[in-house]
Image (cartoon, chains in turn blue, brown):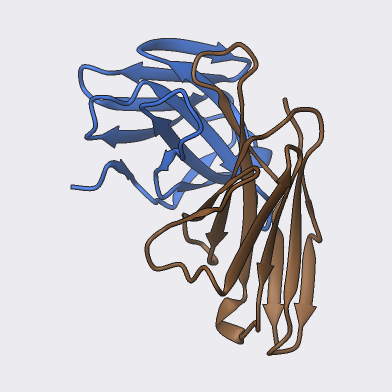
Length: 112
Length: 118
């Protein structure tokens, strides 16, 4: 089993839809969780950062972490065509300078 | 958020030449930077961890003599692709973790450098 599993999609939704993106993981030591958005030919952009379990909201984006289920989610409300990108989850067990473990990314297309 | 700047954003070179990519942390000091490689429509592949003032740590399967990493200061890491060949054509991205009070630190990425070897 891979450390982080993420459905690669592609996921296509109409404009205005609620999008749910998910990752599962196997390492119970993970406690730092991030979501990145990557547009084509660009570096990933940090969207959300969550420590331990719980929810975090920022505008149209909500990140959820359920450590008991080893499951994290990113919700996008009122999706826009500009949200079309690849979304990567990433996580780490350590607070030091160690690499994050990334999911493979989910390609999202929001159709106008 | 913190800014990581990468240069050049695009480079085209002839086979056999060497190419240097710079990664700078603009508003913070980065003792460690991470270099990734990404093929089209694929996920990020960690190549190496660059440590200021010491040797980089390479991931398994990454040729250290091929991909030279230098981290001479707290704000600059460089990746040199030596004797580049067409199979080295890829998107190279650097990143650094910022510890600004948030537990664990956040990882920020540069804009990426697209290398095309003819």
